[in-house]
Length: 224
Image 1 (cartoon, one colour):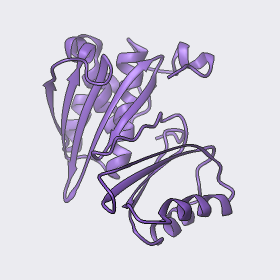
Image 2 (image 1 turned 180 degrees about the horizontal axis):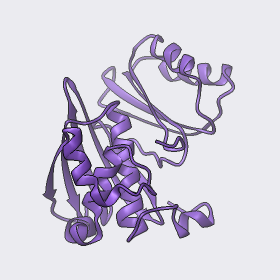
Image 3 (image 1 turned 90 degrees about the vertical axis):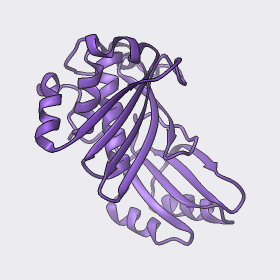
């Protein structure tokens, strides 16, 4: 994945010490929370590579926790994110995984809240930039740089045409799209990175299309 602008190298406005281990980790946590759709009650975080080896010293655990609490990268509460998580009733188990995973700075997050659950694999790839490699068991990729819709659906004829047609009619441009499926006619996921966030009514209409199981909006461009 290439850096697209100078701010990808410098990093975002943030609470340090590291854009990779702190700012990127915050953004990963925020994506996972939005995937779940609410405040997690329980989290299992499996860290790989450099994340696993240095997370304590670099504050990666605090940064991921802050993102799960929906803090921004420059939130002054990041150093006390563990205390804030306890206040919010969120418990986190930290696991050191073996190897590098998909990237030396990667993490697998499992989240639960009541009947809801979510799972994500992502990495911080430098300058606060992240790469998401899997959502809820589907091998789909996204960056978090743009408003993103993750749609879970059955692998049925015309589903993707219906989704793209709806976005086109509403004047929403698709910058990137990725699809994965469990098998023919089984569960599938399509991810759309968009140039602009659609209105809530568009998401509601999308959820009513045939064969759609769930529509999730992930948008880090909105301040928490």
